[in-house]
Image 1 (cartoon, rainbow, N blue to C red):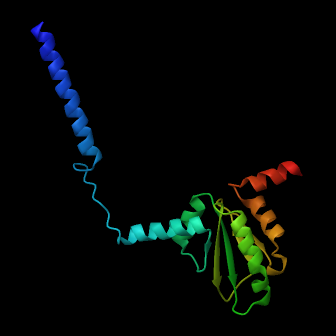
Image 2 (image 1 turned 90 degrees about the vertical axis):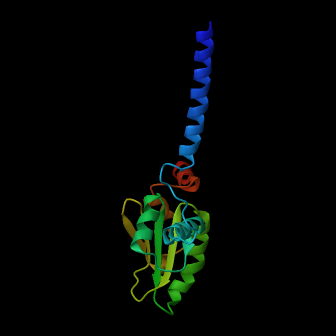
Image 3 (image 1 turned 60 degrees about the horizontal axis):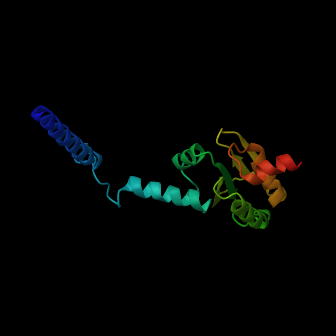
Length: 164
């Protein structure tokens, strides 16, 4: 009978010990994990990229690393590069802004002034690209192009296929 009490006491001590050990390891005391500084450049870059993907619109040219990370999330990248003083480009901007709002979370629009431009370039996560000339940049054309090449689509794209 005393052996059972000793065994029970031993099991209780082992269970408490393993619980405490797990808590210590989980907190990173022995795993070598360190708290990252809020001013760490990597953390700041990740936060900025998360902000860009949440907003879905950025008014600068993205780096190739940022573009790759955006495409890896399944979002479609829309490049709107235009030369300074382009009237057709300025006329297309309201349609692009409205389009970006309709498909928020599925697309990131990158807008910047650049000397060379062929139109609005859609880049799918697969790497496939298609371009719409600025003269044809209506909200309906942008939506058709997006729904045609995007791998991850909002319900609006899926329902338009069903509805005919």
